[in-house]
Image 1: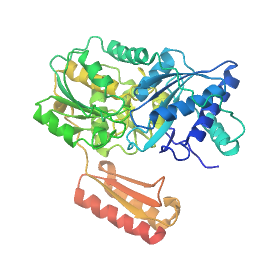
Image 2 (image 1 turned 30 degrees about the vertical axis):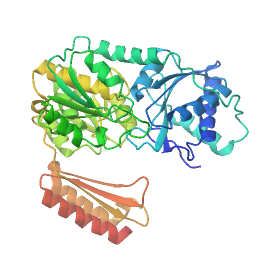
Image 3 (image 1 turned 180 degrees about the horizontal axis):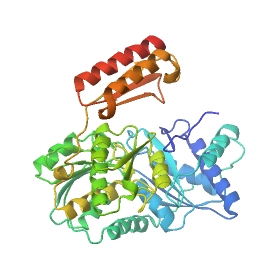
Image 4 (image 1 turned 135 degrees about the horizontal axis):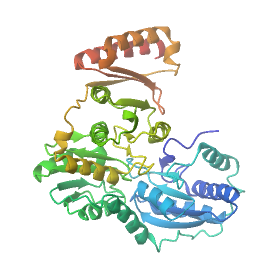
Length: 450
């Protein structure tokens, strides 16, 4: 059976399988049926979506299926992913359903499902949904009302509740001396973020806050920072923040126009928490994609970096296992598990601003001590994806390069999850040297597997 759920739910082009109306109805019906059986009562669901044009009809298709299987559905309408996760717990819903494709272009969309704990549904539920999709597409769920729409009369109240929660978390924070430029990616944060940050007295210049259902993430937001960098300099601002389409991640620009990515945020927050005696076990959690420079810088502060596979799901698992205080991804998805098990771009921005305010330093000053090492990534077309360690020549030369790099560099070999590509990523102190090493190993992979 084909696996539809990835680390971040189901994602595809809207209107195409598995995001066609019939399949979405089955997804809603399957989830409702499973919760009915588990709870022994009518399950309560809340839905929310970003600004892309397919969001409303996907939300309604999901709710038609869920209601047909005896669930009750309410909608928070356009709201961030962490907003839905918050509401699920706050208002005792049994699951929160987000309709979003995050940083993808408007043609795509997705479905991700949260439990009240903030965790995503477990794989057993996902596999049962997939089983219903592939085995019973026509018989198990009879759609009762093709015109059904989720109850949304409380949507404004839900959105206000989420913003009030964030404001209360930082009730002593004043941003009166901060001039902030924010890029809302024409996405879910477009109305929410400017409203929230103005509550703290910040001088806000907001860009890309005019969603038209098709311009989400289009040359803006956390994937396209050039305009934000220019705007920060033009406005003489001291802080810039860019969200992605569903605002579960954020990247930053300092007062000099320099990018401050997720690794730099982890560096700042690790030191800030450590100085406060709140960095549990002297540990930070990141993924295999985080730059070796972060690991080297943290080590100098006697802070340990634990790495996981790519995906916030795996970061969260390791945070919980180790009772650590902060973790995240280079892409800007940061988790503070003592506050929430869900990454939240607006929460991260406020935590960062709080750290700046309490330390009396600029964003560029707070990144001192962290240097991003040069990186090279080479893709190699392969005919088959054999384990690298099973190919003697590849394994021996990879080991040789790792020895050459020592503690001041890193080699990561992995296959693409969607293409027949091997990826050779090397980080080190010397750009010329790591480029030569990467191309050398790529040729060996090509000779053996290409």
